[in-house]
Structures are given as C-alpha cells and as structure tokens.
Image 1 (spheres, helix red, strand yellow):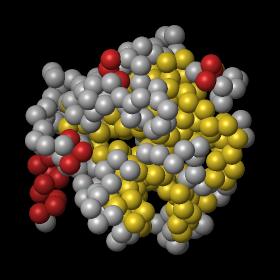
Image 2: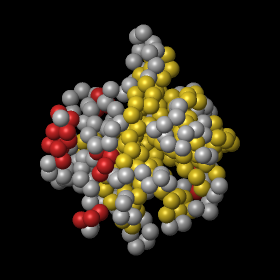
Image 3: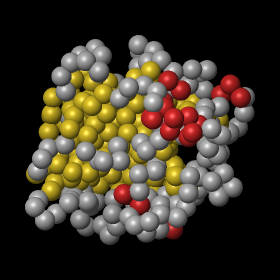
Image 4: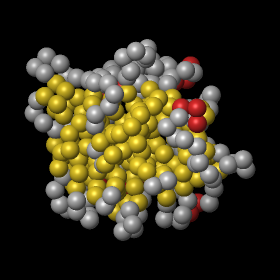
Length: 331
C-alpha cells in the first residue's frame, strides 16, 4: 500500500467505538466513547490526522439519575433532512444498580449548520418493538429512504444482541417493520457473549455492505460482514448474505487485540478508510468494558477482484505516536 495512504496509529487514545464522518464542508467530525462513560464529545478537523489534536467540545452530559444516567456508549453523528442527529446508548440507574446491561438508544437533534454550534435537543428514546437492552445505532440513506440499524436483545432469542433494520419516519422515529438481519450463529460470534453489535454501512459496487462486531470485548472481539444487492428489498431478511468467517480480527504479530466497532469514511487521498478500536495488549485486569485502552485507529483498505472489501489485518502501532500524544497531554 502506498505510504501516502498510511495513517499514524493510534489516532486518538482511549476513545472506543470511534465514529468519523466527512461532511460537505470538507471537515472530518469525530465522536467516540470516553473512558468515564459520562458525556458526549465532538471534535472537528480538516484532516484525519488533525483530529488527534483537535479540541473536543462536550455537547451533552449524562443525567444524575434515572434514564440516560450511566454508561454513555457509542455516539454517532448523522445528517438527516438538513439537521444533525447524534445517536447514543445510555443505561438507566437506580440507587443500587449501575445498569451495565440495561441500555436503551437515544437521539439528540441540532438544527444548526455547524454541529459545534447551536443547541442539542433531546428527542428521547428510540422506540423499538421491545423494551429491552439496545445499543449501537447507525443510519444510512438508500433509494431516497433513511434506514436505522441497531443491536438489541430479543427476549425470545437466547443470547445478548442481534442486528435489526428499520426504515425511519424522521431522525428519531422508526416506522414499518423492524427485521432481524443477523444473529450470532458461528463460534467466533459467541466467545464470552453471543453478540452482534456495532454495525457500520458501506455502499459500493451495487451492494449494501454492513460490518458488525461479535463476541466479548477482549481479544476475541472481531468483525463480521453482511451484504445485500442494492436493488433488493432491504427489509427482507432473505436479502442479506452473511459470511461465515470474521473479516477483521486480532493480530498477535502486530500486537493488536480485539479490533472492532468500526465505521467507514473517505481519506484525504480518496481512499476508503476503516475506522475502528483495538487494544495494544492482550491481558486485561477485570471487566474489559472498564479497561480504558481501546484506542481509535484508522487504516485504508481495498477491494478484491470479485468486489469484496479487503480489510487486511490491524496495523501495528506507529513508533513514537503514543509518546507524542502523552507529551501533548502534559503540555
């Protein structure tokens, strides 16, 4: 791969579930889960590398109690019908419960042209077919329709979460059928937990591609892949084909563990970019969800001759990048 297409990694330390979008203004916008799980931050830069030093702005802070009061996870920024929306998951807490796996999905709206300006308004919970554990929402447009993809626990299905798809009435409301397009079925999706989550959407070569992450959030965490033909009925589960193997996984050789919860964007050179988190060590003390060192990373990827995305393997940390970041924090 051309050196001009390589990015220094980690891009941003201690930001799990990274999301980068490039807007029409030519800027890149970044969000991710902060280690404290207590707020939503947004940063902007003219380049991917510029996001590393960009000043984050806190656009929302968790409530003191009740809904949206703990474990604020996986924010994403989307532009729909001329407005900005942030989708995120949050837990409901009580005096005796930290709500680790009691998440629901929520939306914020901002009518400003610049998402760093204006007012972010709470639009409430995204209502789905069940009142159950739900998280990791994303959105995409196809054929003049907006769709919502998310992970949720169906009380009637053993396991932790499956992937669902629905058309959107507006930026915070679903309409029509809510269909399951994937559930954990292979061994690599069910290590520690039976999980399909962290969906990301890519349109290319006449197909709609959806990546997702499976298994527990330690070194077993990895990415899978679904696809449908662009002229298929996306709300029919039969339209989706799922690969029986992971497409992006731990690289012992490169010292990269548990890569996943990705998104896609386009680099300054026009290349397709995979944005994801991974740790640089395997051994974790305690619950992996409370280990803060899932760092945001980025790499260019290509396509095979038969039109499949080729993500390769997670690249090793770039020498001196972590020292530079530590030095910048100390200044």
